[in-house]
Image (cartoon, rainbow, N blue to C red; front, side):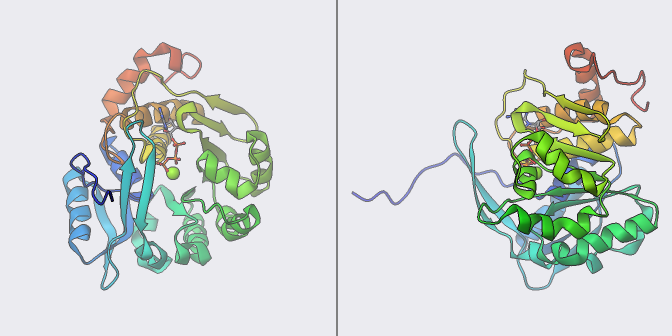
Length: 306
Ligand SMILES: Nc1ncnc2c1ncn2[C@@H]1O[C@H](COP(=O)(O)OP(=O)(O)OP(=O)(O)O)[C@@H](O)[C@H]1O
Ligand SMILES: [Mg+2]
């Protein structure tokens, strides 16, 4: 007998993409990010735009491609939470530096680029140009990577990212990505390979284990909070990044920002969707303040704004 259909729970459409997830997280946490990116002129693009508008994200940098469809991921989540992706991401390759309104770079404090390594035009010069421009205006630059292809070598990735990494102040990849880029499985090896770039900070996201942070003088491995039950870890890394940026904007130290970021991601993974579980600033702040175990070594300032 042939099995040709399988019943699943009602699928839940939601938005995603590194930069979008970070923008939504920051907006929910009370910051004012402006998102730049490309969506298609289709119903999925309308869906994305409607959701961003509902959350209150400033979308002045979002433009619509006339022919290519909005990037889509179908995420199959197993009962234990493991995920399998089916993706259609042709549009990601087309997003260019020239699509980003220059005034938005001028307005920004931090210029963050998500999903390096899977945006062809940005990877082939756009990201480096963006960060050079940002640096010429005195802005801080921050980069995250995505979608490791196991058939590519670390040499390939390092060469691809090199021009951007030379202009990066804060590099915030996941462990899998950092490992693929450097060809090293140990954190100290990852740090040593990346040290010559002279980042202000390197943060490696360690999934359920929390994160590693170094300013190349000191280093911290910060476990995440354990009393959250993960339901969907999609976007965990991006909500972490949004939380980390929020901490920096508050003037907190990298390690305090990382504790806060762990908490943001912990809340996020308890709900379905890439940003479904991101709470507001006060909820995370109250949680981190109450759970002394997490903050004893990394005390938050007395007031949320530092
Ligand atoms: N299973 C989990 N339980 C608790 N916290 C988690 C879990 N997975 C991730 N986190 C939190 O999310 C953060 C980032 O996770 P991860 O290392 O998976 O990033 P990522 O691979 O960039 O994720 P993605 O690209 O899917 O958003 C971790 O540092 C941790 O704070
Ligand atoms: Mg990620």
